[in-house]
Image (tube, rainbow, N blue to C red; front, side, top):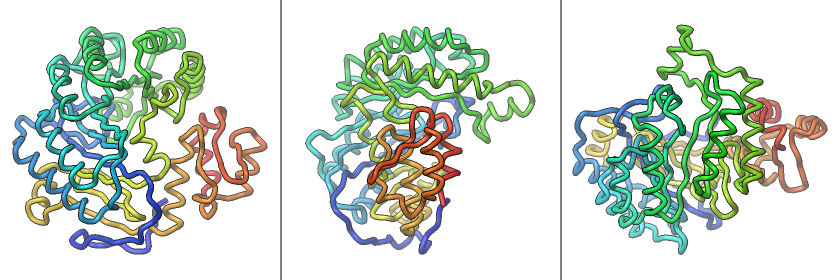
Length: 390
């Protein structure tokens, strides 16, 4: 899918032509977790000891490098992801937020999100994280009953998770939490009950993901040995349709394939990704898109630190993307959204005849200036992308 006009050694920053001002987002990756969940293929690592002072300094150095080469626009959002960034000392979070504001400045309503695990130890830091500047938290509950949590390899139980959610709602202005569904043996009535409980908890945003078996995970190894049988695709599709109907009726409709929110509570940071806006990524494995240039950091924490020491940044690759590559990326990201995306951004990357065929089948809708996938089409999004992409 990706192509480029050039690939560059990361020692020299790529300078691309500027464009009209748009939102600029910042992603900061904290790669450490207490344990590795069996479904997780993220860049997360378990370490007995983390040198917090060294990590604070390295992240500040990586951030300063991006400030030298990234667009000079106020940040509309910051997202601390991982890993488990709620394991970061609140003082480190505050220092990084202060540095980001010094480098770029903030939009008046800047959104600052931090992903958190719902353990009692991490929940005890929520008040200090709010004082550090975090105003939105994304809580990894993943399930609301102990049997599902045990299957998913989570370290918390349901009571601890709900207590952490209550603490988060008292500490932060905006709270979202994640749930994973379409588990083996999970039927519609059980998931409907879980959804009803989740909606009654009063948050304005839910991230609801179907369980997928990702290569390289413990679940993938279990499936290969016949120890785990993924959900039947037709049953999973029924659960997907149930999810959209129940959340819409409760006033939290899907605005993206897996994300549901009350109007105005959508994740501003993730919308920047899905609308193919500019974002800066720092920390191990972080990716960025700035003025048509793709960036990728070294993934392994120790190797990233060594690159910081040597070059004062953690970049492994900088790649100036061709117009065609940018159009394809915008297509892949934008069709996840209920609103779709502007045709002018993707016309060079799509097959008009394929779009016409899919529109007649009711899977996509198009106007003179926008293309979107219908609710029926969302069930087939991967196939639709393969069909319409040139």
